[in-house]
Structure formats: structure tokens, C-alpha cells
Amino acid sequence: MQRRWRGLVCSGAVSVAVVLAGEARAGGARTAAPTPPTPIFGGAEAEICAFPGVVSLSDGSTRCTGALVHPRLVLYAAHCGATGMKVGFGESALAPAQVVEPELCRVHPDYGGLGSEAVDFAFCRLAEPAPVPVLPIASGCELALLEPQAEATIVGYGESDSGSGDGPKRWAPAPVRLVLADYFEVGGLGEAGVCAGDSGGPALLRAADDTWRVFGVASVHAAGCGGIGHYAYAERAIGWLEEQAELDLTPCHASDGAWRPDFRCSDFAPASSAGAGAWTDFCAAAPAGPAGTSCGPAFDASPDDTPPTVAITSPAAGPQPGPQAVVEVVAEAEDVGWGVAEVALEIDGEVQARDDEPPWRFGAAEFPAGSHTLVAIAEDAAGHVTRSEPVVLEVEGEGEGGGEGCGCRSGGGGGGPWWLVLWTWWMSHVRRARRTRG
Image 1 (cartoon, rainbow, N blue to C red):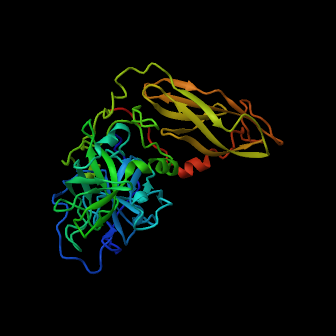
Image 2 (cartoon, rainbow, N blue to C red):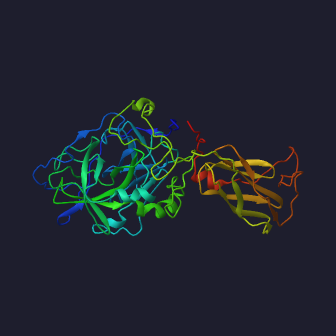
């Protein structure tokens, strides 16, 4: 697990917005006239570095909870909003140990307020991977764990009483009560429950390999603080999240739910409430689970003797209108063994960009007139390397080809490539350090 973190800022205390409607209200809201105090959670404040993948979110006026379901993705509730959000790591939402400004936050387009629990989803994408074990979204055979009377673990930064006590990260076991069409119910009726500030927080269940899985996103709670919590099904957000965030959220499963782990199916948060380490070194001592085995054998249970396959799917070879052509470069790469670890893009004999996460998109590249050769290079987690068939672009217009087929600047100085390589990719992705198995 990478333990490097950058781009951190400090944050002060913030307040919480108020929303109330009938017997159900958004979990991240606080009423102006609170009901009599009702203790919630019924558990304990989290130890230092316990549940490090549960984070706080704040826009300066509303405070919510979220879960790190991918090293670069925080899943939370749409009713918390997406404008001006900052992500806080640590045991206090009032004074986070680290605060990060995400590069992108979005709410689900179908969310329409209370009554929309089924799509109460939002996400924030981080510029770099967070250096703590993640809480992946349940998928495949894991979904069978969600049933009435199953013991969930709920975590959040919400109130301990109606109208007070929010800020510290708290956790508690709570029973799953009903599994309904649009949401499932957790806690309440004398058991631990959710309250203002817990919106977006996860309902966790223990997978067969003794690591946590996110099953639900806290949406609303009924009958005041400590009442039954309504949780949106996190698995139903995967398609939208992957499309919008351009990240792979199912490293252990195929799109149909079949068990197909790669090397990213590992280092998940152990199913424990114990803390280890300190935030001064980003909880480096916090344990991470081994290669996942929740629905089958680990990705490396068998040797990987097969190299990956790779092809450039866009652009197509052939003429491009000039005198300058701007094209999106997209590759497809697969590996039947341990998974594709990296895809590099070579232009006219020189590697110009690398990506270590699917989908393998390199944004837009600008080419001058002349002939240019594109090759994608895939390397799998076992070290096998494959080069794609070359794609040759012929950009129309007056220009001189370089000795290796690159577009070169005419005149003195020896020339060289002068395309604006991959500007869209570099603006939307901070280069991630390549993961290694440890």
C-alpha cells in the first residue's frame, strides 16, 4: 500500500445544515428544534487510525461522512452536495488530521431529494491515491451477506444526541432489519442508529476473507436520532461511479459478478475496529488485508505465465485532417493472469505517458503535419510486456517528417517533437505512482 500523500491543507470547524421532512430526514441534517436527546451508535469513539477509510466531508456549512471505496474515490450521499467539498481524514470532523481538496465531486443526476434514497449517491475523486486501506463496495457473491438480522457495522461523524455531540468518528454494530426494493434498514429500535452528520457513511459487513465491504450509504433516518437508518445499496452505484470517475471499482469481480481478481484485489481494510499507528505518518502501521479470497482463490494462487494483450482502439490508422490534428488516444488491455499493471503510450519511438489504472485513456494529443506512429505497451503484474500493433497517422498539410517519423520543428536547434502531448490527460489525472505488491 502506497504511503505517500501530498496536497494537504488545514481546516477549522464548520457547522451543519438543517433539513427535516415528516418522520424521515437526511442523516447529515440537524433540526432547528431538536427532539429530546436520544443516544445513538451505542458504541465507542474510534481509536486513532481505526476505520481510516471512513472520512468526513464538508463544504463549510454541511458536514457528512464518506467511505474510501477506491484509493482515489470517496463515496457518500447526494443530499450532502458536491460544491466546495473537502475530504477530511482522521478521528474528528471538526479537526481532521489531514484535509484534501478533491479534483472532482458529483451527485447522482437522478437524485431529487427525500424519497430518492435509491440514488442518494455522490462521489469525490482524489488527485492521488489515499495511503490507507480501502473499503471496497460489495459485489458478486458478497451480496448474499446482506439479509435481515445480519450484523452490520455503521461508522460516522454524526451526533451522539439529538442536536449535539457531532464531530468525533464513532462506530457500532447494528442489525440489518429489512431489505427492501430501494434501500435497506439498519439499527434503531433500541439498537445503535444514525443521526445528523452520519449521512453518506457506510454500512459495513464482514466478507468471508475477514475484510470489510461497503453495502450501504446512509441516506435518511426515521423517528429522530437513533431511529432506523435507510441505506442506499452501494453496489447499484458502481456503473455510474465507474463511468463518471473513470476508475475500476471492482478489482475482484468481472462485470457480471463472477470472481475474477487481479493484483488490485488486495490490501483491503481488515474487519476490525482496532486502531494502529498515527496520522503523523498516515497510519502506516494500520494493517491491510492480504490478497482477497472472499468469493474464490487469490489472484496469485496460480502462476501467471501469460502475457497481456493490448491494442489502440482510438484513433484509427490513416489520414487525419491537418495542418494539426487533435485526437483522443484510447487503448484496451487485458490479462488473464494477475492483471494489467500499466499501459504506456509510445509516440514516434518515445514513451510519452503512462497509466496504471483502467480505463486506459490518454486524453487528447496534438500532432503536426507528417507521419506519426503510436504504440501501446502493456505490462502485467507478473512483469510480462506486450507491444500493440502500431497505428500510423498521416496528418495532412505541409510539414516535414523527422528521421523516426515524428513531426519535428523546422529550423535550427536540432528540432524534435512539438505536439502538445496528452494535455487533457495530464490536466485530469495527476500522475500516480505505480503500485507494487508488498
